[in-house]
Length: 470
Image (tube, rainbow, N blue to C red; front, side, top):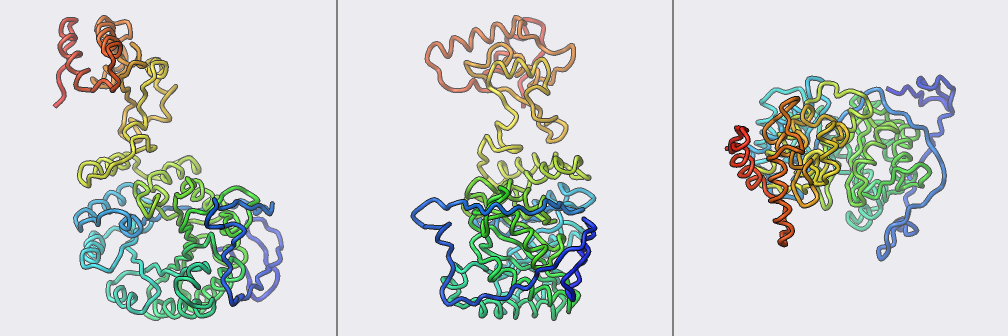
């Protein structure tokens, strides 16, 4: 943990080996009227990105990991999963996270018997990772639901912007803190680790409410010896990762402030983002880079409104940042996508990275020609090895002979000397048929079935023993 002596104004930073001043004297500003940051958020206008040009250091933690909210936030925006579906997806998360448990935790609702049964069944599997945790509102009634479940950690909703404190809860800031702390203390009393979900942190008064509240939690953590996690929730997707952006929207500023002004070690900080402004993945990566060990995600990014940070995206980002997968099995990403399509009836946008039907598919003839010569030219990485998805070609009027040859090679797993040339008479004949189709007014893609029929029938005339797929 980041060693900071709270009994002095100075501490030696073990990372920089510099003596630093600890300026942690932030007290609650119990305002009479809510601070809604109207300079940033005028409801009838697009939110503004405001700069103060204050830069904070990039300090990625030694250990970073992923946590999952598929069965909590992910379930808020689709039809509920069955118990069996939850258990199956949980097993896939375990497999994807690998032996080092880089998918650390998964959180569950507790409000229905179905969800509680699913949590119990996942716990019965005995996996160390992902650890089964729960999520509750800051209420004693909700707490009673988790107290007897045997979980070691629960999330607690602690809304932190004045939009929520004043306009939803109808409390003052001090009343909200007292209310939240009462539930946190009940968790500590029965040995459950609290994970405080700071809802709407990107519209909150960071130094007037967030930091003073976290300092109270820090006191409880030190008195009890129980780790209390802080989840910074970008509930509306307002977070901005650009250096020099002013709070409350600055992701670097939030993570830095939690670490250095609220005294929270990296391993107790988690980022939870939404994708309303297309910033879900970028903000999660930024949280890692500036000192949060955990990023909270959902499978396929399924979550409220535009969704959460896609878990599969952060698996790939981990590998890019660390240079290794550390045991994660990325082929499971394709298993997960196939399960959502076939078993859950989920429509995945075809151009979605890593899981969409068109992710590593090309229509352009010039790209297909490149794939024929060297797959690496137009494929982002070895998708067959890492995702169990070989690159493919869709055939249209722009695919050319190279596209047809690449389709045949891929469909019939032809490699090396056995690959079909774009000048092969079968390819030439198929191209003539396809060209005639589009000249006569066709506008749709040539289907795999049509291509197979030609390859099987005409290929036999050229001594090629292709067969129809089952």
